[in-house]
Length: 178
Image 1 (cartoon, rainbow, N blue to C red):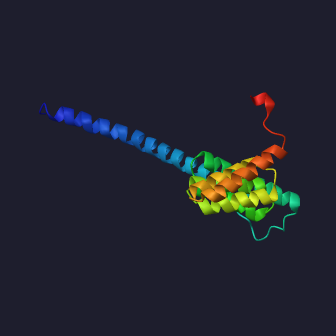
Image 2: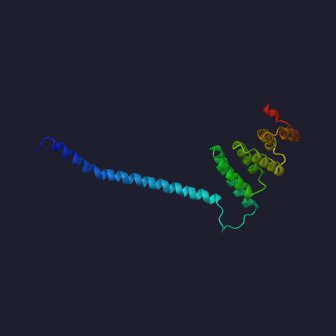
Image 3: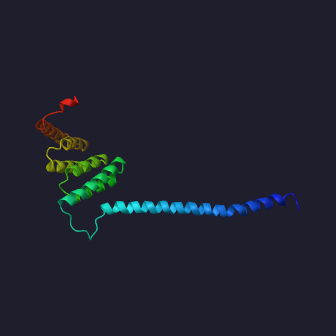
């Protein structure tokens, strides 16, 4: 027996001994990965079930439509906070399509349109929000900003005056804030 055969025998024996453990670790890692993916898919399916209309569902009443619109609005708000503006806009528009009288969805969609530099879309959403809720002061001021960004200063000035009139009608600034 040569002196070199003994270390080789040791390394071969160690490799044989390690092989079953290595396989079990790989199997364990694969099982953990599979479980994590399955759980992620389950969460996605649950989330999609909230937002994807099914053809077998009955038509929504006014309360059901508002609840579904609010669900889209909440999800869109989360997307906007995560800087996923295209996805947020999609869900704001779904909220609007479910409940066309939801001024807050219009207002938030306009804000996202501004972030995406879609000035004309922002103006139309703000105007629609003001038609639905004429006392929405934020929409009245933000539409002026959208007009300014769209390079329409005369329209922006008109909207500023409208916002000032609205602010005056609502009773002025909150005295406690100053």
